[in-house]
Image (cartoon, rainbow, N blue to C red; front, side, top):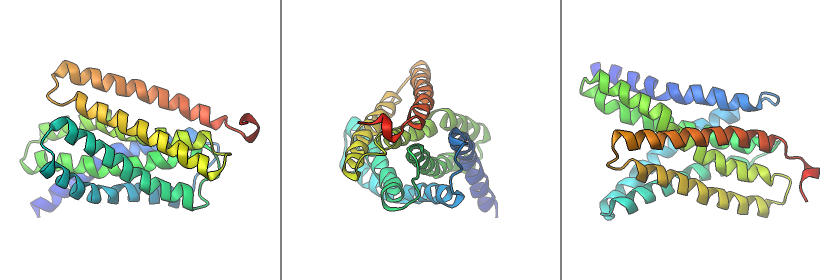
Length: 231
């Protein structure tokens, strides 16, 4: 019974930060309400993607000895699997009605992914009875890794949204460019915290928060995209 309570607390603590950020980012397009079912589907899809990521990243860890290469490949696969989930919704359904939708859906997938990832990171300290370490881990995930997932994925959504009124091929090309940028951002963060000192970690979190500010600006930019604004 104790282990069930531990899992419940870890899940609740892991999902809460993602829900808070989800509320914030969906409010960025408060003028156009998104279907809750689609948002929930994105969130759950991102959560399920973690299961696939665990197996693939275990294979990478077993076959790649170099830490730099390993962390880079981990970042690349996570961004690819999140993009596949979001892309299924963006490119193969009628759920995307205006340019900002792509950013919202990509961010929702990322937050679902981060929720389960956070749960797994918190579960270890809680299982060992280290409440303080679990709280510290949760705080670090809230202000760091969770935002990396959101910023990276939402950048892909921005690229797609910016060419929203172009043909499907242009959207796909823009998504690939965005995916490359997302991988670069995620990998850079991963590599910046390997064996980092406390000061280095704070710097890494600092530029991630700077990226969040830029992300909010991009939300406003993509809202302004209209058919006549594109050549």
